Image (cartoon, rainbow, N blue to C red; front, side, top):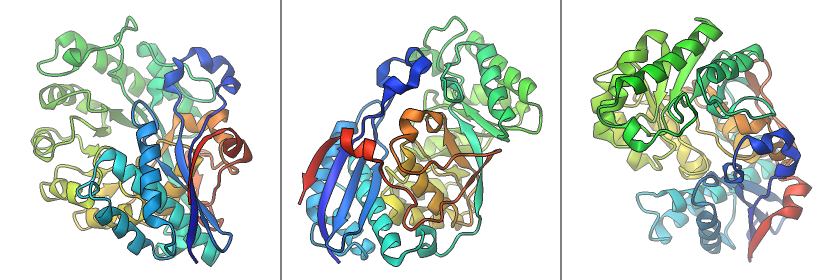
Length: 403
């Protein structure tokens, strides 16, 4: 079997179907997933996604996948290790990783795993060694954007509490929010507001929000604090001191990814640190494992080298007793691929259910809808990753073809 063609696509979610949600965000907030479909001479195809489709980078990774596709035409997709190493070694710039090039490798690698599963007529989890679990505990992710099929971004303390309560009523036993985006008047916080020796007013506002969420959802629901690297070592330690009494499950991306800074923070707070959506390779993760600063890693199958590489990262983490929650921010293609790996690894902790997964415009991009029910999501049992692009997605996308 040989790879004959690669289509690289920027998908166009039908935002007009969002209805009331249109007023909730400016249009750039809605992202356009970048995916590829790899074809073979035996009629089998596979779909993979690059998780670099929001804010900046989508157009760059689209053309990087095009360049990478030229390296894989004619190769046997069953030989994923051969192809992965070829992309890594022969592209010159991939050595040591980087967001755009690692995302391109990821999209192609994930599509290759989809082909492999379809060829052997088994789910990817079987090729990875077999699933340890049939469903995954999930958390409601990014509640600052709202929750459900109508997004209502949190602008004040009451909004955070209401969004959390809504998710908990649906059966979620854990929620995550970034409490650091706006002040109580709805104005965006600046970098200066969130770094260095932050003011008591800032700390009081964030603590008030987390306290309100805790009161609204009770003591048995886990709270995850998302920082998106908005804070630095000084500000996050002050914040951790304020919020540790609310029994925080973990704090995510407390600062710009840097092993020594993470080590300093971890040694000065009892709240576990999580991160990884901006850490891309085995080599980059190694320092965090060796200094024991990260207790939960969050590699993304769409930016960290795909299933081939991320499985190795997860195994490496296991030797250091570090847990895993894959970062999942993309179309249902990205979700389906993540479920395959999370079903297998022994150090899995919890699955991320992003708020966008509940919006029809994104559900319509794929054939199958794998949704969280009562706080858990089932593992797809279809061959490959268990999903594929819909006719709507294929007919409305921007496309580049490499043969």
